[in-house]
Image (cartoon, rainbow, N blue to C red; front, side, top):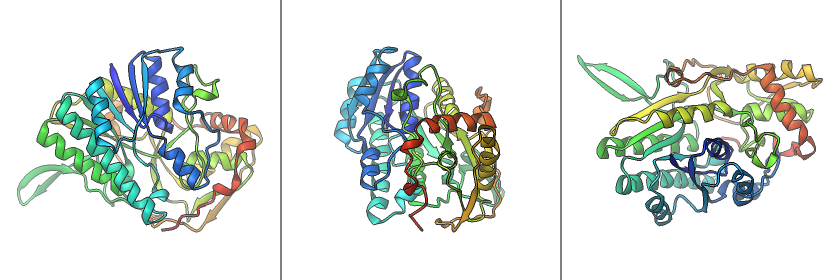
Length: 380
């Protein structure tokens, strides 16, 4: 296939790029390095600073020469249109969004830039596809955070309603807990508008917090690993806990730690997207999958990290700190996630081995860990 990957320099974007390159697809990569810029502005840094995409592609092209990169901002409509007109991809994988709840809640400037970037990038993409190649399959990364924590089961995207003896199907109600999550909700509404009015075919993946390192035959080459963040703004919770354990600082559990979410290994994120590439919706259909494999409370994750790392002589401690976020800590949470397994996903479940493998990767770069950027500094 000819696949356009938006946000190809990111944690998921680069993992996806490396995997699809190995499968010999023709790849068109787009990124404007905005996340790198924001991290520098906010004095946050990844565990290991990766070279820019062109340098990394020199290694990747040993496997697949059919890769091209554009340093382009997806919120620039004319540039997006030019790329899509030139290449006419079979599928587009859309990662080109600012991916952080704390970043979006830091101040007015970053809140608006999150909304503007995320909505404009999505709007530009679907408008270009409508006008140029309406049969192209759009795969959009959403978030389980769109749903919030309702007191009913979370269905996969849709909810059947019986009201006054009449029936209909609607998008499942959404209630985000940050401006980042609100931008994703608006994305979904925008996409559904274009699907039902212009017969586009879109897969929207409601992903839970992701963790881990993408492993394949490239794993020994650090230059081909994804950017691994662990800070309070861009790091995800399990990755952050493992870095804290390796750095011999307490695992910071927000509040009681009873908050429950659905989690997924980055390896399974890649598998899920590959499965959706092979299972394109019909024109006029918006397919929605809840993309997670297991549910844990934050406290359970911390305890699992502590217990698992004892096997490699890392004695982690846990510290409950004041919750910097407005969120329910005690709540009902039962999200459905069977549809992606029906497509063939065999999930890689979280285990002591998985945690230890991540810790070993982190330990290679232990001297680069900056303990000052881990504790939360954004409150809302």
